[in-house]
Length: 427
Image 1: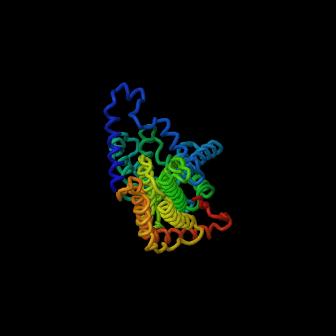
Image 2: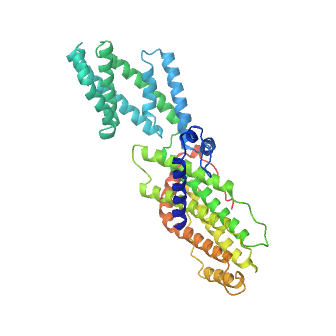
Image 3: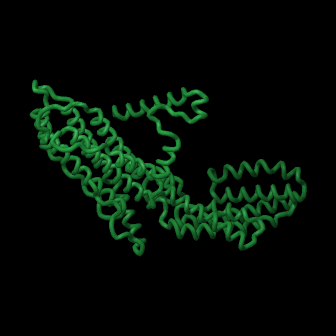
């Protein structure tokens, strides 16, 4: 908790420094010290999504191909108002083919209802543009509020009514323009359903499971590497490992992809097969693992002491605890991908803490019976490992629920199922 508060305080300090910049410094893009440039941050975020499981990448590619195909179909078909084909395509794109199809039906039904209501209104009003101008604000207000307060179909109906009113204000054509919109929207919906089948037939829940599995795998690798960095700093008999910058970057990238997948999961209409409480519990656990790794790394990166004594016993205890912790989370990550079962959390060795304290008291002191700074860091590292181990009990049931759903998904997608888990232990 103290490390988390320190990190928040450091971020606030950077915000204050950024706001204290002069206008010229802001215009020229000058940043406070310890802050990466905008270009470097953009490159890092873009690199995070250059991965085949990225929801952001899936949505971008699918949206681009859908829009391009809609324009091509509209051009080849020679429809009267081709931009409605593109609008229809983008309006109904969802995270699965099933939901896209359902959205398409709602869009067509809403457009038809809007045609009936708007056509009747236009027929009764005729060419009296003053009345149409008076009705237009109410129609626009309904169009904006209906999707959130009533339904997606109601929003499509309101949009159709607004279009009919606008077209008849500009050039009175009657209700026939609504028929053209139904035709164009139907073409756009068909394009979206086709792209949904090709690019993402499984939905946001499955994507969230894969993103969570990757985030768990990368976060625990980062934590294991941070522990490894620490134990080599406390033992001069083995070479010091470098700061795990690569592992930290991969963990941050996986967390960004998980954030996007969770946003898509929340935005997806329909039944949530993964309970929201389970999803948030797993996502919170990922954040805790990364924060723990940051804390361990920060703890040892400030170590400047080189106490005398044999540190092998203390290093061995820490190393074994870190390896056991990483093994559990690695297996859990594979289970979240649909391969294997989530293991029950192992019982703690009751003698491990006593052995560590005995080794620290015996080996890591200043010769006068007082613990050295390295000894304190060893004990704190053990506490961090224990906190991550206790987290297993909170992760267990949500992970088992998501793993079962993921295995069911894999079974239904058996012709395309992978033959091995995507996360092989590297710790």
